Image 1 (cartoon, one colour):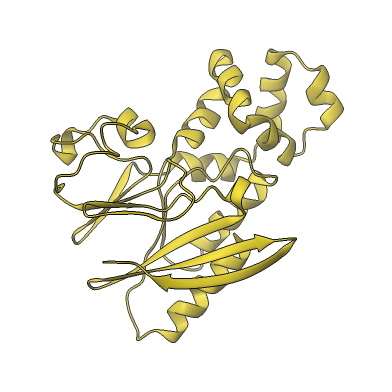
Image 2 (image 1 turned 90 degrees about the horizontal axis):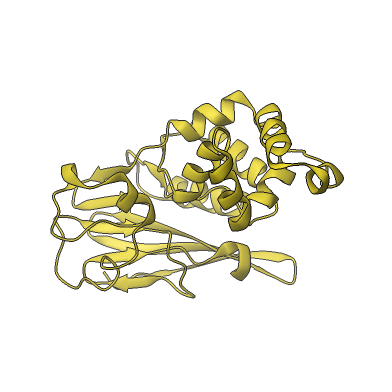
Length: 229
């Protein structure tokens, strides 16, 4: 994440002056080894430039897990353990704790500023012809009538829907080995926690291209390429 941020900043500095906005598509937490560090870095980045955060299903689970034991159980089965440990809960304490004790520990170690940052996340951002959303949208449903659950969790029928949407959709949520380019959408969740490949999409006018931070054998390199816009 740090290397990708640096690459984005270099790319923006080398481009003609523009009113650049960064949109984070959500799922900053879970599965990776340092969710706490990712959230803190994203929050710090927001103080340096215009950064819009979208709510992913994992942010939703995390925030609800702080209040609801049933959601906490679900959260822990989907990467929440790594998130809890990244916020400083000792591994031995985690392993011995009951659900109630673990919830209490999570609330104690989760910084208020991180909580406010994740809670401030939007469900979508519209910029020109583009719609940025975490998971996708329900086809044929007006944007203002979309259900929050769909925006954060949907897969089908969105993924296989081939007709144009009101906007071209940029999304994450569904992991693919490479960028998933379709005529009506592009999915850029390349599964960094398991693939070592974290993807950003750069949109300038009608052009689309990508920047990726790729880890191989502990070494991170930056790769760039053109999107078939």
